Image (cartoon, rainbow, N blue to C red):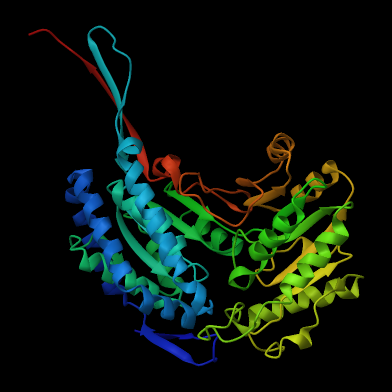
Length: 463
């Protein structure tokens, strides 16, 4: 078995090392899952819900230790890390709350001599491939609904955050979950592709890059198994002339720079009406200057390091290209002492005089940078917001809810926010269009992705 290490962005040192599972262990895990699925499927929903609630108890009891692990593994400031576990609980509890209604049989109107209904049956074995940036939130979106629906789950987590996979395993073990129903394995890319090709795998839930999504599709090509792909984003915000500008500034800046901009649904580009443009830009700059760039384990830090030096340098290259093409940076990097090339510590940045010929406005950055472009009309904003290969979320800021809703209807995105951004409400379907992926998690619709309809057409015969 080969070994891998998680290098902490906090200090550039190995935080944890683990061994990849060997092939025999992977195949044994698949067999355990397949063997466990029938009895798990036949277990009453109420019993499956109890196991999931006990799993949440583990996270609540170990919240502080897990938050510290998040900070060291992927760099989120410790003051914010525990919030992810609150979000995990919120999503899991909501999916448990709606499971009964979402999974119940669909009974059709009476027809003399016949009985007809549609049952939602689990798919079988669900493989969840989770990323490092929101290591618990992205995973729980698929894990809990899959289990509630009667599926068994195998989790492969990012090598950057291996302890998150182990925490899920420990939580379900503490809950007394039957053996084989949930299993976490450390796998390399080749092993992962091999697992996905297995005819015993019925569904794959992947969160990650567009390139990663294509690799998943290639691995399962020709097998007709279902996929849920949450991929990249270049999410826009539009500030209308009638917006509450201070509220828009506070919301958009947080949406752009929280988690060091490493969020698939974070705001990466803003279009601001000319009438409020100068006010918005000045306020955004003032707010960004208040960030404290520092080690994630420092309670004073509000902007932690990016996950890797290479990720930070990629964003720096985008900025440098934009500046060379005429864009202007508004934040002095020297004001953030730790920020330097070749390290994951990167100063936040705002750019103006940008346009869509620049990568900074079209290519996913996944870092602490925001391009702001002036517009004169709603139509201009709509056109530029849609001028993207991505379509995960979009945000409109306006006091006119009717006008905002009209604009939202024309935006090519899976979720459109009015006067907020960068948030997943578990009652709403989480989905994307274009290169932001396909499929859906959360809400009642999310259960449809993890089940198959089975129709029952019964004719009553007199004896």
